[in-house]
Length: 212
Image (cartoon, rainbow, N blue to C red; front, side):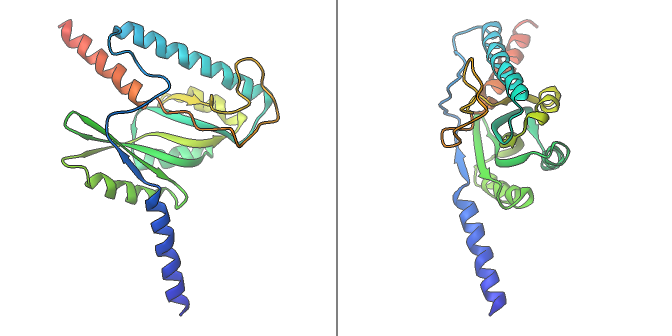
């Protein structure tokens, strides 16, 4: 009887986890989108301005010694499961959601999953979803939603595989004033910059081919 109950609980937990797995195609809506008609240099410059703005807010968060800040961490390239687990271990990051990239021809798919069951189980679920994409190739994990503390920001911002630690969705990260008191109900995880990082790289590659 006890084994049966335990089995039912495990199944229910897995079902709940699967419910929070999403699969989306290449169309996207982002608060920071690259202009298709801009040059590579202009888009690259705009993206760097955004990174600079966010990094200034990160400095203010460090000064205020804030903890459990909602952050979206975008990587410069997709990471393997083992690399992701290394980040979790070294930086003691509390992951809340992972986003993975699957490519099928010219289309880019994003698989998103909560991490409440741990990274190994999450990875199994994500890979199962990736199989459902026709001719899809699983590239790895492109960004994560996480809770970070002020004393983790320095190392995260210096990491060579991290494009940006975006804390702009925190209510205490307003343009000029940082308050120690935050309203957690209004905090949110900023949209990752994965699409923009990929687009910049594609523009760069196209430019290089054009100059050959």
